[in-house]
Image (tube, rainbow, N blue to C red; front, side, top):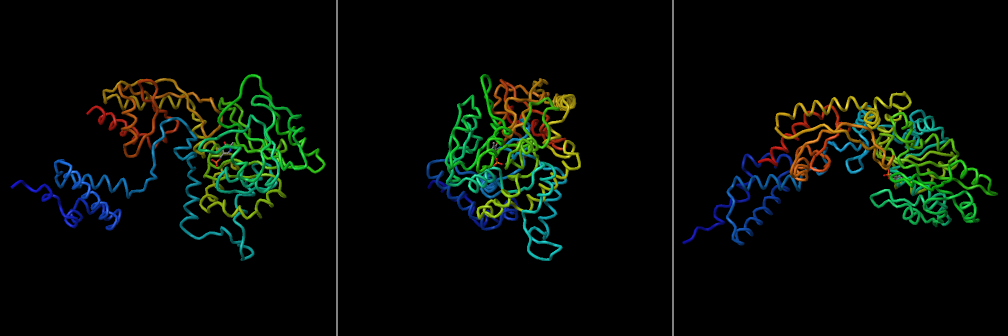
Amino acid sequence: MPDNPYRHLPGLDALLARPDVLPLVTEFGREPVRDEARDLLDAIRADIRAGETPPNEDEIVVRLQDQARAHLASSLIPVINATGVIVHTNLGRALLSDAAQEAMMAVARGYSNLEYDLPAGKRGSRYVHAEAMLTRLTGAEAALVVNNNAAAVNLALRTLAAGREVIISRSELVEIGGGFRIPDILAQSGATLVEVGTTNRTRLADYENALTENTGLLLKVHQSNYRIIGFTAEVGLKALAGLARRLESPIPVVNDLGSGTLLDTRPYGLAYEPTVQDSINAGADVVTFSGDKLLGGPQAGIIVGRKAIIDQLKRQPLTRAFRVDKTTLAALQATLMAYLRGSATEEIPVWRMISTPSAELAKRARAWADVLAETGARIELTPGGSAVGGGSLPGQTLPTTLLAVASPHPQRLLAALRAGSPPVIARVQENWVVFDPRTVLSEQEPILLDAIRHALKIIND
Ligand SMILES: *Cc1c(COP(=O)(O)O)cnc(C)c1O
């Protein structure tokens, strides 16, 4: 009589009682692990029916561990960003400063005065937090913080122009990525889009000719992630603000800055990226920007501008749906305080990365190469460019030194790096996998080098 292939499969309870399965039960809970184990045993029985050799019990445990981790562990985990893209939207955008992390923790662990007026001893407003810092830094009269910049733009358009027309240049009908398209946002807000000018040239007269009684506002959107070069013309904010103010009943000018930096990018060899202060100075009535792009803070949408308009936005019922979390407000305030102290470039990781001298990056890459020499892999140092990212400064790069590891299968090496713990995200240049020190934190360096060693070993075995 042939051996029954199912006979060697462990029972569910026996499997769960194994000492090497207990840690899974402790980490993920008995019921979830039991469900995973049952599914796994069912799958193995199906494989056996299909003619496969039954795995032994140790192999089953390894499969259970992998499957339980894949299904039950937290899917959001830290990674090492060796791409050199500083504000990398797919990798979580801005890293927070130490002060921002501590401020977040402080309001997360305990109660806070989020919506409590301490001197008066009664209900307060969450919208007062960060407002004074934002107005001081930007020169605006008032400020409101919401969940992200997409919400900020939507809120401003809906409040100021629902059922009315919004005039925008054809060169600014951009898609930012992740499906954020300005025409869609406009449609969503209940405003009607009125496009003026051409892709490459728009003049003040184009706006002027499009004005009607039903114009709600003039919108200017930062092109963010692309540039139009060559035979071009655009109308500056100052001219737009002048036009809007000369009208019999003046209308607001809204500027979606996208990244919205508070610091000048030019001292770092980068092109001019308009600052929030410049937009306010030029006469924009409302400026919106992200908290987690060049500002270097938490995910947030920041709206600054005229007090009458900001008050109107605060009263709008939709604001509640876009409202910002207390930990975000805490991190944002701590980030803004670094700007007020004048120490943003030392304290805020995004600016520390932008301002790292290229000689220091070369030194770090050289040290990595020395450590990795013993792997026997072909390693070179090569000049490269780090990108600022976050839909700012397209095509602009900061000079860096890349650690390049030769590989006949660069995609396989990349995949092995991604499968590591922690995962490492790098780039491929021809037959080289390249690592940019600019976006790797110094405390991550030994972990990165271990991960590279490990990945090389996996693909060479
Ligand atoms: C990034 C960006 C947005 C969206 O900002 P989020 O904070 O990601 O919601 C909107 N407009 C412009 C011009 C941008 O660059």
